[in-house]
Amino acid sequence: MQFVASINFITQFSILESEVARSLLEIKAVKLSPQQPFTWASGLLSPIYCDNRVALSHPVVRTFLKNCLAEKSRGFGTFDVVAGVATAGIPHGALLADVLEKPFVYVRSSAKDHGRRNQIEGELKSGQRVLVVEDLISTGGSCLLAVDALREAGAEVAGVLAIFQYGFSKADIAFAEKGVDFQTLTNYDALVEEAARTGYVSESDLNTLKKWRENPEAWGALYA
Image (cartoon, rainbow, N blue to C red; front, top):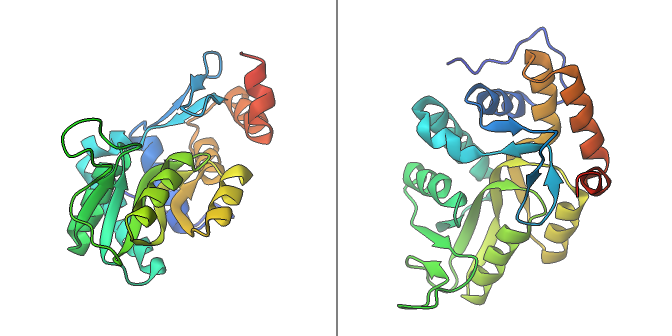
């Protein structure tokens, strides 16, 4: 599989964003269902679902994303530990920790109700600087809960790194309020542009995706 951006296609996105978007489309990690929308954990209805866990079954793409995460992680400065957000952020975080030769922990949405009753699994020392890894960011709720848990444990959070984001202003506001920097490999707009360029979506699907992106709540109300 080749991840080389076409020099003949003018794009507002970086080569990395376009290449990552194309890799996700090629392995069909992106699902479209305009007539029967997906329901997210937040309750939001969406005609699109990005499942980065599919990449784990594709060694070439898995390695590509791992290396991209490693390169992108440099933007957070030095850090001691990589923390994956349960559950989808765990494998990508573990892969990143492995290539960087860093300790790894993962953070549950809440503490277990049995055993050691841990919310953070693995060895984490107070004062350590932690990079949080998530598979994707929609509203930012799940990974910010992980940030809270890590801070309560005495860790310093370097930031959040994810593969994909939908680009909602709600997420931008939430991260800003928590004082957390977040970066992603690619985003919704880059994905839609690449899908249109490669013929992955029809014109009607493209119009649906654009309308949903303009006002997700109003679009979802039509199917509620």
